[in-house]
Image 1 (cartoon, rainbow, N blue to C red):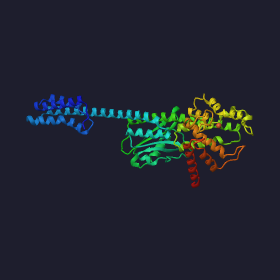
Image 2: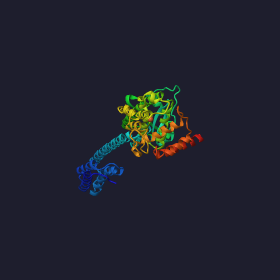
Image 3: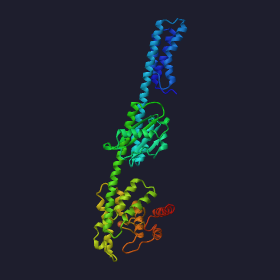
Image 4: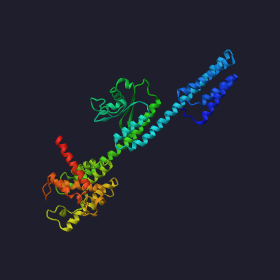
Amino acid sequence: MWQISPLPTSLALMGAGLLVVGALTRSAPLMAGAALVMAMAAPLEAPVKRLAVLSAYPVAFFLSLTWHGVALGVADLLGALLVSGGVGVLVLGRQQAAKEDRWQQRVVTALHKGSQRLPAARDSMGIIRAGLDTLDVLKIAPHLAFVAYREGTPMILAGRGAYGAVVDTPVHSFRDGSAGHSVQTDLLVAEHAAALLRPQAARHTHMAPVHGHAGIHLGLLLLSRSEDLPFTPEEKNAVQAFARLLGGQLGQWQAISDLYEANDQTLRALGSALELRDDNTGGHTNRVVSLAVRLARHLGWNERQIHALRCGAYLHDLGKIAIPDDILHKAGTLSEEERRVIQTHATRGHDMLQNLQFLPAETLDLVRYHHERWDGKGYPAGLRGHQIPEGARLFSIIDVYDALTHARPYKAAWSCERAAQELREQAGRQFDPFFVDAFLELMVEQDEAQLVS
Ligand SMILES: [Fe+2]
């Protein structure tokens, strides 16, 4: 289908008309001018159109000779050759320009698409996969791979085309395990990765290192193609631009991930320190964190929600720091006033944490409301049902289950079955029944997993 704008179409038709008139009147200058107008105006995207423009003048020229019954002279021949050559140069030049335009448009589209898709990815593998999908839009090569080091060994983490069949394959093992990330090493890795494919699939391979912030080496982009067509400088530039975009996103994710990890370790240390002051609940914090995260994953919570839950689980009893020892560690029955003082740990913990900007709001909610009850008889606010933030609703089940199944100074450890029965009975009273069901379901799955493992 001819998809051309009205102005070039009019010019091309005018040129064709003038060519016919020139042929009928045997006017060589008119035919030459008309052929040049056609060459300038005609669309050149398809070979047929290109051939039509290139052959229009010679056809008209020979028709004019036949029509007028004129013998071919040297001047006529030279003129025809000059015009045909000129038209050819024009057409090929315009064709090359159109090809470059299309290529640049494709690069811009791919980079634009990448800049939208990469930040939307949820983790590093998501970024890498989205990166390869976006690179695929450029159509530079059919076989694409991202290679990164795992414990000193380069691995194909993601692949498209023939590399898709060798994902998770180690590329090359360095004997000393510390080959570093020099250009020579990258080239060696690229060579070994390409060798994983059939020789015909990787006749030409191009490698682009991917660097994050401060030049940290994050991996390699590999492009292989089966045609005997070396990668052009334009293609290499486009791949490099894309590798920078990918490196920026991966580096950003890595930085956030490191920050989360640092925060996590700090909170873990704080939670463990708290246990030393509390009664002998050794391991309670780590257990409730682990169990809460498992339940959240079982429920399909996203990573942001899980992060907030994990932080809250570490810090849920932070406010106990502010409770006097003689009340916190009292062996006998607590008076009403002492019970009220202990209950302040929820709001005190919340108040202590509220200025920590890096903590999600859901974490603060969990600390404040982890003793609320589904029936509204909890503390500190007496919230009921779905008024209670979901992190606190979920966590309260885990907190109580762990307390029941482990010994305290004032009670022996309950069996898992007895604790599960207690949760069942408290569903709709103390706990959100939906989360109780999910937790019990998780417990059953775990038991089954233990049986088959
Ligand atoms: Fe508590």
